[in-house]
Image (cartoon, rainbow, N blue to C red; front, side, top):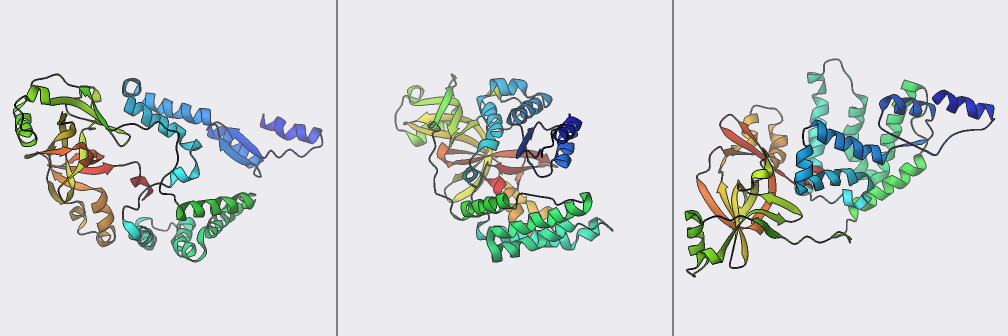
Length: 360
C-alpha cells in the first residue's frame, strides 16, 4: 500500500501530501506513514481508541464488572470520551499544593537532573536538560516558550532522521496561545448539557437495626419508632460518584468503601463505610475510622530528596493503623474522596483518589 501511495502520484505527476492522516494504533503502519508523509498531521482513529480500551477491559478480566457495575462502566466510557473533550475541560483540577505547585515540581526536576548521572552512569539526556530550563522560559515568555520545546526536540529529529521534525509551526503557535489562555482564564464553572445527578442514598438494605444504629438514633432523634425513622442503604451517589458500603457485596474485591472524610475541624480522616442510613430526612454514613499512624515521608528520612518531596508526598499518601478502633457517624457531604489502599507491613497506605488530583 505504501509503495502504491508513492508510485501513483509519480505516475500521475502530482504532489501527494495529505493534510491529515488518520490510522489505527498499529506501530507497523504508523511509523512508515510518519516517515513517508512527514509534512502531514497524524491522528489516531477514535473507533480504534475506544476498541483498545474495551480490549484492555477484557484482558484485565473486568468484563462482568463493566456489564454489571454502572459506576465502573461510566468511568470507562469517560476514558473513551477524553479525545473529544473541549480543551478547557482538561484543565479543571484544583492546585492541591497551592501556589507552590510549580516551585515544588521545578525543584524536583532540577534535583533529578543534577543527580541523573548518579543513577544512569555515562548516559546523557538532552531532552531532560531542556526541561530544566522550561520553567524559567515560561515565566519570562508565557506559552510561546513551548515553541522552543518543539523546536529543540525537532532538532534532535533532524539529526536522527535528516529531516526537520515539524512543518506545523503555525498550528503550534495557535495551540500554545489557546493553552496559555485557558490556563490563565479558567471560568469558575462551565455550561453543560449533562443531566444533573442528585446526591442521594439508594439500594435499600432490608435488615434489623443494629446496636450501633440504636445509639446513632438516640443521638439524632427523640422519637421511639426507630424502625420507621431509620432506613439503611448500601450505596450513595455523591458529587457525580457512587460510594459503596461494606453491605454492597457486588463490589467484588475492590475497596470502594474506603474513603477520606472530615469531622469537626479535621478533614484528613480515613475509614471504611460500614453502611449508609437516613434519619430525620438527613443522609449519614457509619464509618470505621483508621487512625493516622505516621507520616509517609518518615520512610524516606535518610533520602536526599526528603525535604523537597515532604509536602507533596504527605498530601497524597497517608500511613494508617491496620485495624479500626473507633466508629464515626457523619453526614454524607463530609465524605470527600474514595481511596486507593494497599497493605505495607502492619499498616495501611492510602491515597485519596480524585479525578482532579492528576493535574498536580
